[in-house]
Length: 218
Image (cartoon, rainbow, N blue to C red):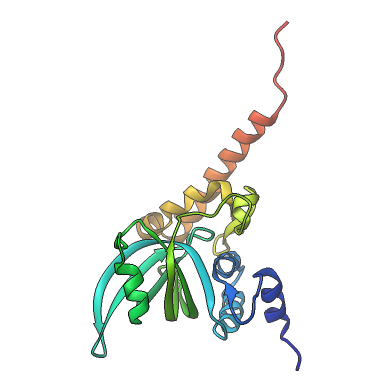
């Protein structure tokens, strides 16, 4: 049986072990996808296997009731891509991990396994099915370990292709993405494009100026 090309590439790039994929690298690949079709292809392949997400920073956490079962709904931020990861925990062992001392709260990090079930582009959110909380985690990896953006500050972590020209945001400029929702809400896609283009061009000039040899005074 032939392995689909996309699946083979994912397995190679996501450090596939057994049947579980690296969720952080999947999120980064999803954020870097150049078109909705590419996002759909990545997601279609990802639905087939559980993915292991580390360093998920809890942004929202609340107790809920779904189909007569008590659960905990979590919205978290994945650090490689700055995408949200949204899921509801219902398994007793996972709930116990969240409630263990010190109890997990907004700002804390957890590691979770789950199957990507969808992607909501309006809030940049990966939806997870069958989530399992593996452990409480640290907020970021050790330098040079698992995330491309940790080893290469020039790595692309976000691409915007809806404007007149494609715009790529590098890892060292990821703080620009914190303004995305506000600018899109207030000014729309063109305002977001112009903000990124202007800020990135300014930072490139500043870096070039710092890197240029300084004239020595006589």
